[in-house]
Amino acid sequence: MTSTSALYAGLHDALPELMRTFRDPWWIIGSAAMVLADIPNVAPQDIDVLCSRRDALQLREAWIDHVDAAYRPADETRFRSAFARFVHLPMPVEVMGGLELMTATGWRPVQVHDDLRLDVAGHEMRVPTLDEQRRILLAFGREKDLAKAARIPVSPEHPHVA
Image (cartoon, one colour):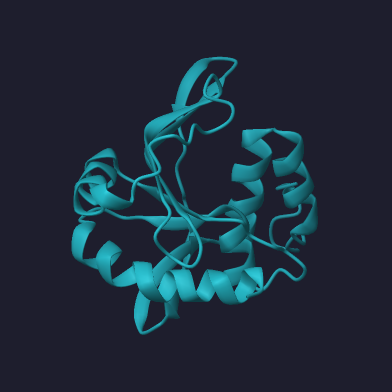
């Protein structure tokens, strides 16, 4: 199974539970969002979900039997959230509830200011606009995030977002 087909199969299986469980706004971010926004030649390894802390804890409770308890996300000094990785789907789902990023001025919430609504497997879901995806990846600042940000075309309406 290609990473794109695994992504869509994973979303097909995950979205019904996400829709049932989540009460607050949430987004698919990272490489999965890039694929959903038609950025070519991106191979997601997981489905990153940005949501509220409350929703992340509710999903963890709903999928408690599927939590990868041994997994530890990289860069725990740079990021903090109510994190869980679920591995029972065609592609792992990583949920980051109330994600915060350590900046020069302290911990700051990761927020999406503008998004696109997409229909996937009959469910409406949201991804950040391309400008927002680039902004978030640049803020993350890791080499892999900067490389992803560089793949997103700069929109003529927002040439300063680069």
